[in-house]
Length: 110
Length: 114
Image (tube, rainbow over all chains, first blue to last red; front, side, top):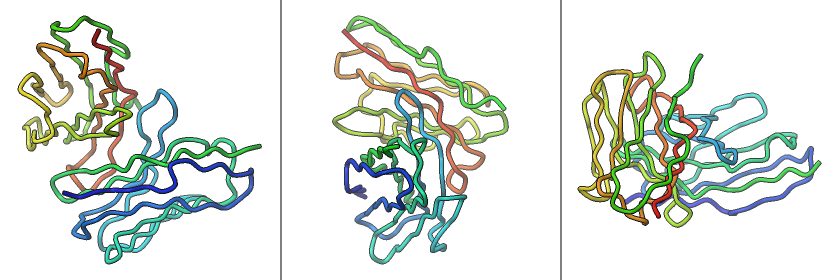
């Protein structure tokens, strides 16, 4: 069974700082990987989806990378803002199942 | 554009009662997913549908759980009888295709079984 881990569980940074969130998975046979953010009391919002054949995806200040062979993905957030404060989750799609990490709770301090 | 709509937003009921959660996916989306989120177990996929047909229900925890999708614009997740350990936030999500497109989540139903 695929296991998805996100470290650290919580992260606090001052506004303006660049930061990296990590996601690791145990089985490299994945279909794609998706990054989400979750605000308190809300559902998940999709940020980026990387297909298994891709190395990275970018959207605005966000850049996600994927290294299947090492079982790792990173989400890079440039010039962080207080509005980026949320929990970030990664989800691995194996082709017939989705496995989510437990998330990294990010706080950006003004 | 209306997103995924779930109802009710909150449900509090007593153990043994039947609970029905409802979901309206985004129009035009062909795939629908039901998830459960708890502090202990995180986010778990329960069941998913493609073109109204259940594809994989291996995540459904027990026979007390059942899900239906009678048409492209409506799905239900039913728990009968409910137990306190079923307390969680239940999310519905939809996407254009089963695996290649991002999933769009509703705001969830917070279920408390007393």
